[in-house]
Amino acid sequence: MMDSHKQLFLLSLFLILNLSVLLIIGDIRVVQGEAPTTKMFVFGDSYADTGNIKKGISNSWKDPYGITFPGKPAGRFSDGRVLTDYIARYLKVRSPVPYRLRKLMPQHLKYGMNFAVGGTGVFDTLTPGPNMTTQIDLLAQLIKANVYTASDLSNSVALLSVAGNDYSHYLATNGSTQGLASFVASVVNQTATDLVRIKELGVKKIVVGGLQPLGCLPQVTAATSFERCNDTSNTLVLVHNNLLNQAVARLNQQTKDRSSFLVLNLYDSFMSVLNHPSTHNIQSKLRPCCVGVSSEYSCGSVDQNKVKKYLVCDDPKSAFFWDLVHPTQAGWHAVYNKLRTMNALQHIHH
Ligand SMILES: *[C@@H]1O[C@H](CO)[C@@H](O)[C@H](O)[C@H]1NC(C)=O
Ligand SMILES: *[C@@H]1O[C@H](CO)[C@@H](O)[C@H](O)[C@H]1NC(C)=O
Ligand SMILES: *[C@@H]1O[C@H](CO)[C@@H](O)[C@H](O)[C@H]1NC(C)=O
Ligand SMILES: *[C@@H]1O[C@H](CO)[C@@H](O)[C@H](O)[C@H]1NC(C)=O
Image (cartoon, rainbow, N blue to C red; front, top):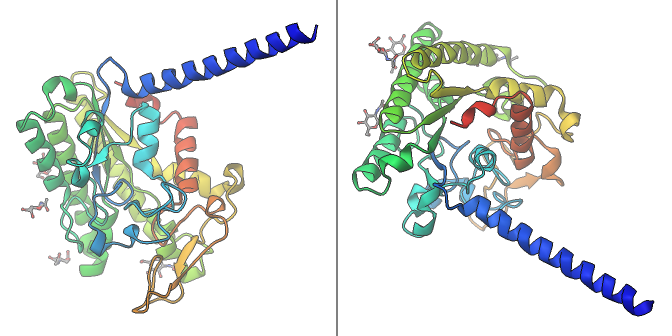
């Protein structure tokens, strides 16, 4: 009796171990796949950057950025994963390698590439990073050099995260309310031009982020001790998003399959999470997790003696915002889940 029990136990253990080996192999096959892998090409700003921004100029390469994932600063503007990583997860591909690191990881080129750089816009901004046009030029060069072929591109998805920095640049340098409407129109027009160009390079599906509620960013809500979103700023965002939706609808009408372009509704997904934070296990909705000890410092700042000049909350998982501008990993995860339940992602597949 004992022996057959023991045998049975060993047999089931053997089966379980084998099963888990199969599951692991299954998992690798999903990622590596013999069939052509979907490639992801990413353009835009800090919501999408996974390591392109240069180390010297950005706090995203300093502690405590990256403490949740990958466990140390890696250039992402968060404690962990960002929008790019979640869209890659949805597409079941590896988060694409940052352009700046492409030579260090040639084996990862097959998953696509991330050209996004924190601080950039469709137009030039206050940061020195490449604008959207220049980021797209980089992909065009790689195609010319045969790093990506026509068949690679026919099985690819582009993600764009833009325009937030164009507006902060406008407000910082000009700020005239009279000029704002025509500036919004020119930002959307330039975005549409960029979308068309990516399509003409051969990318199959092009997903562009609608603007997030800028009036809810801690940078803005600090004025009300992180109590209330600023309606004036959010109204500007809605104007931008309306024009963007119209422009994208027009572009789709001009394409054969009528669905090459897709706007990701970041406004509604952010607002839904911020209006029902507890549904997503978020306790701190507008107060950021990591802040400078005073207004001249920010998350990641140290003084000349390398003494920390910032404070981090106990549990980044319970906060929506990480710093004054960017969501935590938990924040992005909640937004991602919301986008999925809104059925906003199902049309990404081509
Ligand atoms: C983007 O940057 C390039 C290179 O600096 C510049 O020539 C171009 O005018 C910029 N494009 C836009 C739309 O701002
Ligand atoms: C600022 O806005 C005004 C009003 O629209 C416009 O005439 C001017 O060219 C703008 N200046 C800059 C530097 O963009
Ligand atoms: C941008 O505006 C110009 C001039 O108003 C127009 O000719 C062009 O078609 C617009 N581009 C897009 C992609 O909407
Ligand atoms: C909201 O933002 C606008 C424009 O930046 C500013 O003029 C206004 O004072 C802000 N409102 C509040 C309640 O902070």
